[in-house]
Image 1 (spheres, rainbow, N blue to C red):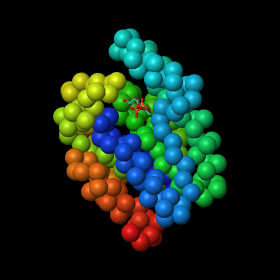
Image 2 (spheres, rainbow, N blue to C red):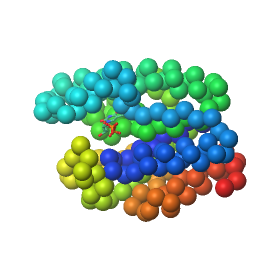
Image 3 (cartoon, helix red, strand yellow):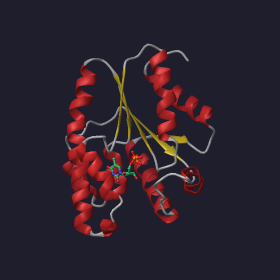
Image 4 (cartoon, rainbow, N blue to C red):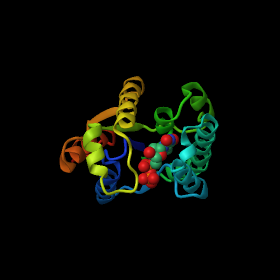
Length: 191
Ligand code: TYD
């Protein structure tokens, strides 16, 4: 089972990932937890590039898109290995982030053809204003219009790709229960 959490920064992906991992672990499952960009050299280069003022340049964006795919192709080996061992894989973002944040959807699909599709994608849907207020004090600060645009693109994609849309404006426990219920159903577990 390959499970992905998607959503804008500040939507609570990492908090939910932590408690999800704890719950699955307590239920006796073996888990591999990953995130994109990864903590590889490529992932770290991506993080540096994201802070670059040239970020609006078209070729710079294309290079970044290719790097996201390059980072992902290595990650896929790790995911395949874990899956072969029967582990549950939890990922914070996957190729769907590229489809939402980067431009040129057909090209993005083409260069990410190798990427495994998650069995379940949860979209942590949150009010961009609330997400921004949750990010206060953190190193990255997104602009509200940008977050609104990304949020709309996520909802559009959710419709096409059958994501499970979670109301991430709710409190931590309610969001966790909503996610848990879906996973328990898929894994035929009791909660
Ligand atoms: P984020 O999840 O915030 O990672 P971290 O907190 O570890 O730096 O991801 C960094 C940014 O990368 C985020 O704003 C979304 C962006 N991103 C893309 O633009 N394309 C992608 O394919 C991925 C995976 C992430």
